[in-house]
Picture 1 (cartoon, rainbow, N blue to C red):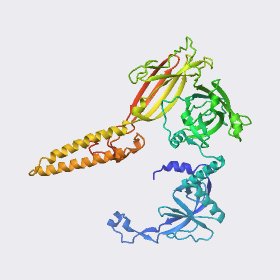
Picture 2: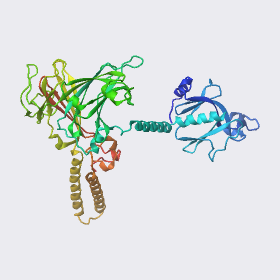
Picture 3: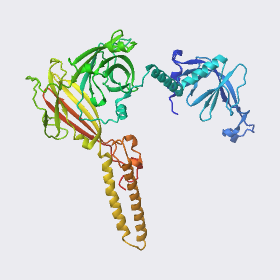
Length: 561
């Protein structure tokens, strides 16, 4: 175990308010006998020699209980040199993987001193540390504090609090959208046109007690009435140090997820205090029906009920609850009633349902007619704009990517919308998908290698009986080709038996059963569309890890034997 001595000393000398408990404890320690020089006649040679064998131990090794000042902070029990609180720190005991007992273990003698109330720390490895307090009540207090100090105690308390919260909820806990789709045996269709897409913004969010603005983020949940459970449907990015955030991440609602106009949608605002540990405090929430987002007008401004709201009605309406700010929802519902749209000089609109043309992958200078060989489906909707009326009907172009399903699977989509200075919006769709070739291509390579090994094996065996030293060389080649044939055949069987995702994460790079499968092979695609300039473009990246035989470590010849 590595530690910084100076940091521990500084931690042990902090004020009493930083510690859970402190006081005097008797700590049993080992005490050695004292040493003296052996009696010998003085001589010049003896005076020059100073060796340990000239010292002899008087007495036996014993254990004594010494009074020391002790301080408990977290799972660290500091003990000092004397019983004086201002003495210097002497050591620390890490209270992990140990049990607190009143009865001593079999291998440890009990403390029988008068006026001492002993208890024992028994560690998993068999080590035992004897402690004692000055009274029975003080011993009970120390034992309770030490039991709660370990990580196991904190985790048990956390689980108890979680169970208490679930009981008070009186319904099933929230689940994420991916888990919900797996439970419903639903495969995400990238070509599906969503019911609507929303963009979110907040204003007048409350600051903390020191007047500092929050780091807000919004969580979007939908209520599935069939299962009576809230599903975590989406989340925005974190905007730092502002009470009036405008979020760039948008959320799409899809009918295939069993959503309808009567589905409740809950928006929860959180103040993220620490990104790494995802520590956040609730600011407020609002609940609306999905049908309200699909109606005119396309903008909806609702108050955020504070965390002190007691009833769901107050949370949904924002009445009777402490206001924590306001939420603005800009929606783009699909307009199926009218196939025609208005057009102005600044917002050109062509009455064309679909176009198709070809271009090269990764062309960032594409326009409305350069769409990577795929159809562009135009859907009538409403656009958010700071310079145009909210009821102006425009066309939102959604890329038809039916050909993507041929080579890729398990897509993930994230959408954004940026406001441009020309009165329009820039729509961005990010896609990530797994390659279907991740497992099929290694199978084909192994088939080729197996066939080659069979041919080489037949060629070597067809040479007949050879004389030495060629006979020994022939036997070695036969053994080698048979070994490679068994290895390639076993690897091919492992690939054929694989069921599930078309993706091998880097965490499984040392798994020999999938040593021929490329690591982190996936597609990253970005589709960008500017509705003002009527231009769009695709940007594709195929990412894959290095083709290295990680499972064989180094100096083993790689994948090709």
